[in-house]
Image (cartoon, rainbow, N blue to C red):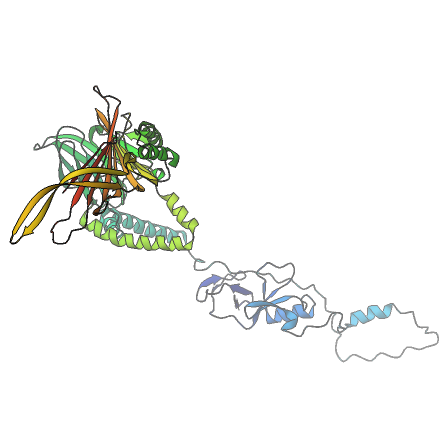
Length: 555
């Protein structure tokens, strides 16, 4: 606090840092300038009954209150920017100390004594006074010092006219700033902040059109899409999109499109294209029970028909159905409503280059958030939008162990699933196969090489196969198919071994005479190491049908 006093003697105080400001005296009304430092002739004290900020006194007033006993050693004084008891700064009179007694007090005390007998005693003559006796001074009660804090700074003599001028000045400044922002400063600012707007126009009709928006001219073909790139505006506004027939200047339609910095917009011409809203974030959290998939793996390894395909298809469709939230045909859709990251919005090279830098900074922030704790990362994930707008209702949905090409309008959909054959098995339980082959034997006699064909008995051993694979299930109008492959090994005993893959293919006709009947086979394609003196490696193709019939071709 800064302590000072007026020329009239009234002390006051002002907050720190107020030096140089003007204020009005609460006593005489004079205009004062607050000094940079406190006046040493002023002190700030606090005692019971005073305001929280204390009371400013001059040294004379302070001494008078101490002598009158109004201030005690346990009262506080503002000393070196803290409140300190008075007894630690000044030597205060002790409680109950004898004070000088006035003549009036002595007279009162003497009057209480018993009278002295004066019989026969002559009074002594009184001395003549050298001057007239002074009149008794009337004791008046001490006036309480009024405490006033100067609070009005820099506006003591402000007139109404000055206030109106200042208000008008600030109003003009605000209007100029708003007009400058609208006329161009806002566009520059949004470009620096990398906040362009993109407009995707979708044409679901059979005709092509010429489009115009904010000075950009584009053409869109029948059934196609087109993007207006890098539209910079000062703030939220609506711009007119003109639609004309291709190669014609006649404008067929004008529509208002909302434009906002950093917002993407999808325009569906005449509402002819249907979009879908999916909760893609929930798909990655769902999983088809492993026991259902294990049932299909057991059927295949045991050499049975894969009849559980239909049950699996029904369950997978049941998982996908709740993820389709809405079907949309609105003419205008914005990124404030849905996540448009899956829409075909082609970004400009300038946008991509600047987004790369922005993505690196965002990745660094996410890394710091992850290091700060899992709770922060969880909140960041929950803040992301989960409602994705997709260009078609038919969409590929990826679950944890199943992927389906979901179409709500068809009863059966193509899908892939992860099969895990934990136990080793031989296709159709075939372990060995013996056969007689015609083999060509080359024999060199002198300089001539003769070739002869001989009958050779060959025993082929099939090693057990196991492991994980991805099975593909497809549906067409007339049949259903299941296929996958697993690594395996086939060995010709005493000769060579082949490493390759077993491929499984099963199909069921949905129409015709063979309707609802499964047909399947296993096929092994392998290659042996290159033999010495030969350029190519021998290969083998081994086929096992559902009846266990085996056919082998080597080369």
